[in-house]
Image (tube, rainbow, N blue to C red; front, top):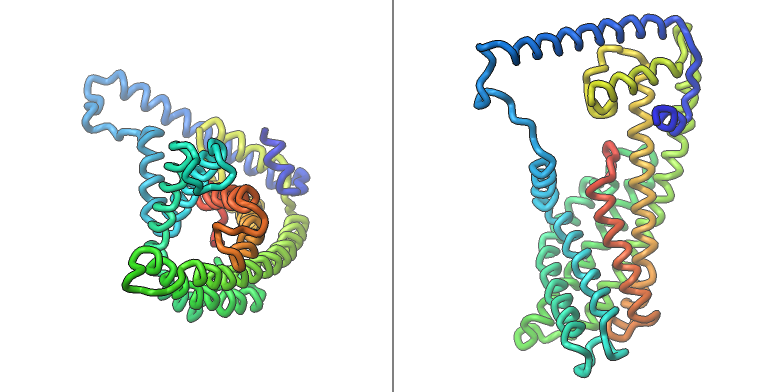
Length: 346
């Protein structure tokens, strides 16, 4: 398992004098850990050991999950992803159980019709969450925050400002008219489906800009990876990155139940090898994040084209391909936001 982790980062690690120094340091650390264990064992047998009320309660997996879930859903965009997963999962149930080829046909069975109705109601809830988007788009134009992290290529910032955030500045007014046209048609007398197609045309521009930005990001990340590989092979102070050091770090982290990428326990080593390894971890996290964003944009491309001219009820490519792609995109978004670690990207 350790060799698998190391080979993933393509680090060439020959043996050097610093390896022996770190092995001595690791042995000393092992000795201290053993002393701590002996102390805790003797403390447990002592009549003056701490009472259960004074001991630190370790967080259970359920509590950890609930804390992460609450933190995730507190963000509006993250909660919208959950709603999107729910919406298209309901669509899949409705589509798979329908008895009529027409989605909203009155002759359809009760379960399928109910799933379609529930899906539409949740869709309207998602419109409410987007009422804050107009000011967010203005902020993105002014600061370039929609680029997702810091990038050296100025074209990424330009696309983020004037195509990503700029297109949404036009999208949100159409989006609001669609919602008002469906909910209060006697007061707001607009054709919601027509404005829905207008909003999807702007959304199509957003998707194309996102694809271009992802392409530029991957090009920059490829350049950064080459620089990292050169740094790993460079011989600055007669020492090189070597396998034994990293293997020792992983083996000690496993024996002490510590994650080598999330703990500061081994930062006292102070080796540039450790810094390079951490940079590789961040780099591959960012690459994974951008590739997931690229896949999400590709999934939404066909629905955006269809809905730009036909709306949802008269689709160009058919209900199953369009909503099926949106279902895949929703689950990709959930994975990207919840489980993808990427340093300082989106």
